[in-house]
Length: 510
Image 1 (spheres, helix red, strand yellow):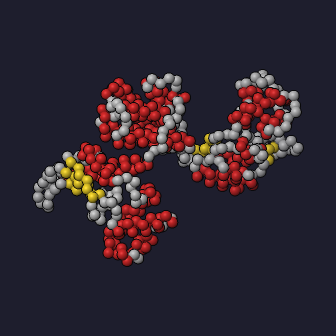
Image 2 (spheres, rainbow, N blue to C red):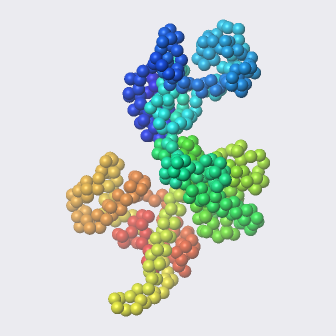
C-alpha cells in the first residue's frame, strides 16, 4: 500500500524517489516498539513504547484544527474558541473528524467545524524536508498515512520535496572556521531581495545548495539595472512605437514572452527555483535585450514593452517580492503584485521559435565569416594586405538534400529512433551501402554532425522539414541581415550545390 502511495506521489527528483524505494525495501526490519526512550506507551502492554517515529508523522493533521482547539495557547491553560475540552476529544471524536466514522456523542456540531477544517486543508500538498530524513521520518510519514487512511486514499500526501544542506561559497558552513553567514547578516549585506535571489540561484536538487557572495552581488546588480531600465522606459514611453505589434520581430518577442511564462510556471510547480530564475528573469531579459537591439530603442512597440514589464514583475515576484512590488506600483497597478493573476498567454509557436533561432544563428555565423574575410592576409614573408569589406552577400539555399545526404539522414534517424545506437554501429551500416561508398569521405563528417545535433535536440535535431519556406523567409529578413552582419546588400538564391541543404545555406561574399 505504501508503495502505491509512493508511486502516485510527486518526489520532484528521480534521486528522491529512488531513496524512498530503497527505504521501503529494508524498513520492514525496523522495530515498531522499544522499552526505553521517548514514545507513547503501548496501551495493552505499557512496558513497551511505540517507536517515536511511528507515533509522530501525521501531526500535520492536527495543525488543521489546532487553532479551534487551542486558540494559540500552547500550554492548554484555556479553552480554544470552539470550547472543547481535552477529554472531549476521545477516540470516537477523532475518528469522526479524521476518518469520517460514525459519531453519536454530545459534541457533533462542534466536531463538524473541526471536520470541515480538516477536510478543507487535507491532504498535505507538499512536505519539504532534508534528504537525511528520507530513510526514517519521511518514510514513516508515508507508512502512517497509508495505514491510517487506508480507506481513503484522497488523504494521502501529494508530494515530498527533499533537499540537501546549504554551503557557503562552496564550503560547509562552520562558525569555527569563520565560513558562516546568518540570515540577518545576509540581508544587511545583500538586501532581502538580493538574498532571496542568491538562495534561488543556490540550487534545488538533493545536492547541497551553494549560496555564494558572487550570486548575491549579481542579484543586486541585475535587479538595480532592471529597475533603472524600467524607470527610463516609463519616463520615455511616449517615444515608443504605437499601433499593432505585427512585425516579425514583434511577433518573435511576444512569442518568447509566452515561452518564458509557460516554462517558468512549470519550474515553480516543480519547486525548481533556480530554473524559474533562469527562464523568468535571465532568459526573459535576454529576449527583451535581443528585441531592443534588433529594432532600436524607438522601434520597440509600446504595448509589448508594457506587457514585458508587467510579466517580469509577476514572474520574479516569488523570488524578489520587493522589487516586483515596486515595478507593479510604477505601472500604476492597484493592489499588490502578490495577488496578481499569473499571466495568461497563448501557446508558444514552435515554428516562430525555429525561424528566429535559424535567423540569429545564420547572422552570427555569417558575421564571423565576414570578420575572417576582411582580416588582413599575407603570404609567408610578406606584409599583410587589407581586404575590402564585401558589398554583397549571396545566400544560397537548397530545397532538398543531395541523395547521399538524404539517405545518410534516413539511416541515422532510423537507427537513433530504435535507441541505444553508438557511432561505430552507425558508421558500420553506412559503409555497407554500395551507393554511398563514392561519397563516404563526405558522409563521415556529416554523420558526426548528425550525432552532435541528436545530442543537443534528440530526434528533433534530425528533422528534415524546416516548417517554413527558407528562401521566402530570408528574402523577408534581408534588412535584418544587412544590419546585423553587416553588409550593404543581401541576395537570396536557390542552389543545387550538395554542400547546401534545408537549413544549411551557403554564404558567399563578393
